[in-house]
Length: 269
Image (cartoon, rainbow, N blue to C red; front, side, top):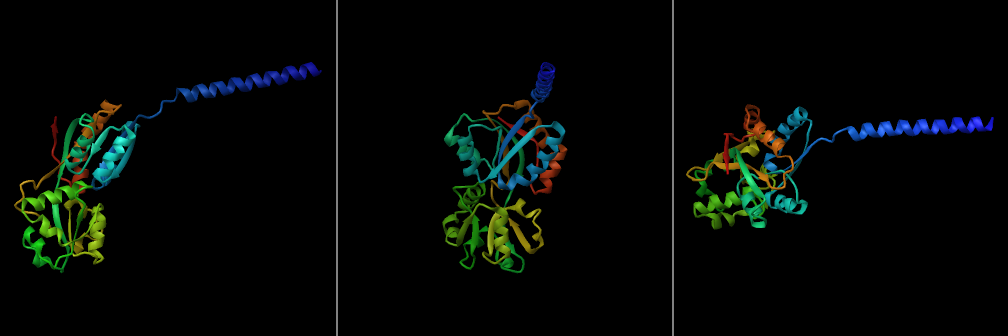
């Protein structure tokens, strides 16, 4: 009797092990989704997130999106040592990355244009701004992006220098910021009366009707170009190219336009 019980016990153990092995084999057979890593400046986070959601559903891949200012993104790329795409808000981000490693960028695709605007609260100094030179008026308390950290700050400085007024305007700057929409909040809350910002920051802003936006006229680099840079560390190039084609499709164009970024298609090597 005892021997029969032992035999039955051993049989049950063997059956349990066999069942676990089959389950493990099934688990091993499941393929993990391909993962794409994208680094983008904060102004591009919303349109990219919208496109990423639908692209993930269509391709069953996973896209990790990191957003910050260009300086911090470059530091993150160098620290992580991996990634597929770098999308700064202007070519300034590429200059920063090339200063660290000239071989990391291997290709680039033009995905759209953004513009620098001067913003004020409605019924507050709006009639005082007749041109970019008005920013030298000492009655203005200006907030702008940091030229050393972000593409917006760098492009703002370049624009003001082209008019020969950067140092004069700098005397009116009360603080620097890396947050485009945060600067609009400060404007509405009365912490500043003039903001130099990306025009696209205002597009989906809930209280945009309270803001006047003046695009800078007479500036040769008025149409700031936005490129997606392909990184040498990419491990899924065909899938990344498929995503870029999606970004440049009619759907991508619609999404970017809805966020204030005018899109035309083109490739730069």
